[in-house]
Picture (cartoon, rainbow, N blue to C red):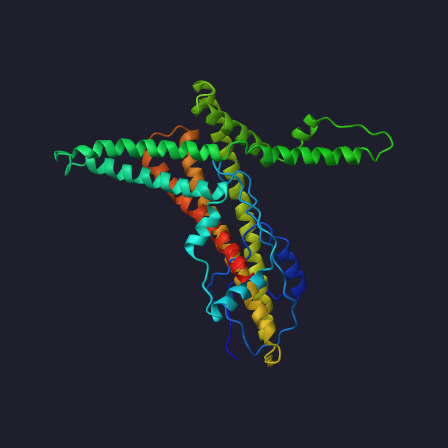
Length: 376
């Protein structure tokens, strides 16, 4: 038998406990991405595998507070088993049915305010990048004494106006985004009141008490949404400019703090996923040491491979979320700490990178929705 080496192999025979522990984290990240993932780990087809029950995973939004201060929360997707989506995609491929077209996916994305926001963000920062390169070339010694065409100045003005228009449009798309955390706090207040009513001497708690005892991410999201709306109304001319600038300053601080919190949560989540991968690899390694033939039970090997692939895909999107949060942190740090050096180039590049990262996650999620529609 060929030997298999694992960097963190541990002898763990409690496969059922590992599967139940893994399922507790399924509703936090994208669990049903059906793209193929490569792995250096290979299952031994001749090893004995006990019967395993296919475990369903839940597809939901990336429930992280304040991931982007200028974008609403991602929409919640209906619960669908992961294995069903993978088998549906494989079946459509075998039958020669067309896969999800890019135009269909973008059509579904642009139906939502979140998808439109991401599309506008890519356009906005792409134009900013073009202006940045154009300005740098114009100031270089090679083109400094070259006569510029007359239409270039007019095109630059139009691009600057378009950038400002996209920025204001994106802010208008997320007006009243503070209603979501407010609804969450009110729901918690109603639960507290109902629990108080069960006592012999009920004492109704005031709503302010619930606000003060709400989770910090929820409060930050509430302050963030209100401050961002005030800044948007100021840009629309409905509120004074000084008030809008102060509100934008508070919104930037909320964005900065929530990004730090999200980075910590992202690190914790990734460590748990890595531990689950080690448990699956350790279980398969322990079983492969038996050396018995398991051709009569090939389903177990397939389920192990799918479980390991699911964890690897989840870890991939966790890494994408981490990079997006890092781009946001760099971007907002220039506003919070009033950095001046290389502010334009750094914010342009980080903003464009964050736009592509968040759009890729939304695109994959809507692609799976289109695949389910084609299957139906």
